[in-house]
Length: 489
Ligand code: NAD
Image (cartoon, rainbow, N blue to C red; front, side, top):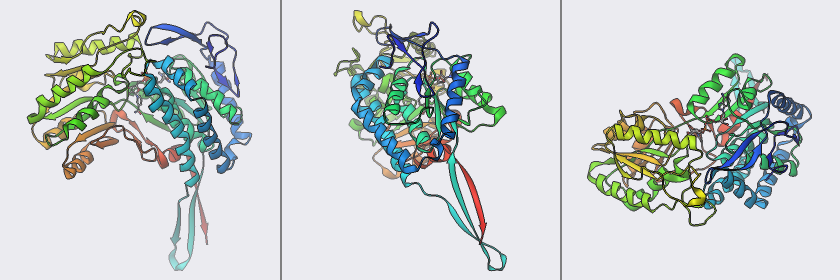
């Protein structure tokens, strides 16, 4: 891990800055113990990062040929693979997630992000139109795409490396320079990535990392800085609102991947084994801390008892424990504060008359893990769409099961939310699958699966869940500005 002694440092203008204050702790959520100190960037260091990024653009990075930029992305992917277990260890230390998940999802996706965007950018073309003019003359219109410039990349703690590389790979591939602000709770992998990008020859200043918090800290200093040309942000809807306000006076483009309150709809003709396996992942993956996780499960009444019983059995079968053990399926929540928030929703659900079918308490993992933020996988019945635990994003290993009778009713219940990120529909009737999937007011609608991603397809949300899309060509659109050239022929 990139530490000088026990320090996780900022990476600014091609070098690690020496810590100059008390910093803040990097805490292992599985045990509650501090494993390093993190250097908090002050306003001046953030300024140096932004000006260093601008200088990198002027010094040639923005004009580097596409084939060189995409070759660099491929070398970064190779280098992450070469240092794979270091990234896995850093991700597990920061988040407490099971080592198998870090290997199979988080770090594997970081590699895939760099390779996919190298392919997408290498293959990208330009729009052009031949315009017929009165009298038979013509004009040629074509758009050249230029880098957006200095991009602020602000990411959360739940899938820190995956979400970071999802933005950094296309941003750099399009010729931008980035200043990254990881979550204060997951500082390690963004810092390790700085080493990797330097090793593969990225010019100084093109990738910067500033550590700290949101308001009155690195996040705010970065978004307030007049030298940034755009913000790509993943996090909560409330913070998104704040970031939008901050950049509004300077009219900077934003790409927002925000919260969700995602629904699954299970019809009575669904393959129940496949559905239960899919729902178990979609409710409990990463301890429910994925923006795409299902927190509302609508089940057709005739199979309600069977689905509820099957899901309870699978929830109880999850193996909470030492994140470094291969058999562990489920880690802790990210922090005591976040567990407090989830526990408050458990209390609210009980007040609203919920029946807790599974979980609802704090599990015993073992003395070594007593300081960790553990919570039992929890399932409720007896709630309705009016209740706050069914309306608000909880972001934990919890879901409400709610019966429905007709397809129209299921669609109306699922769409009865201000969020609009993701949904899944479980049925063997493919016509119905297509019909209901398209009727969902969301950015990503799955049929008989969940979190199956083709990185070339658009990703993002509607309503409170975000603004814009990233992925494939959508990322290229956000990370570039077109200049249309019109030539009279
Ligand atoms: P958060 O909004 O609290 O923080 C996200 C990032 O923003 C952090 O780096 C934080 O330090 C920074 N930040 C906070 N206040 C800021 C400010 N005023 N100015 C600038 N930066 C600021 O979110 P979180 O708790 O870290 O993450 C969980 C949330 O992220 C959930 O709501 C989840 O749904 C969402 N999320 C969305 C997606 C998606 O793709 N749509 C993916 C993952 C997580």
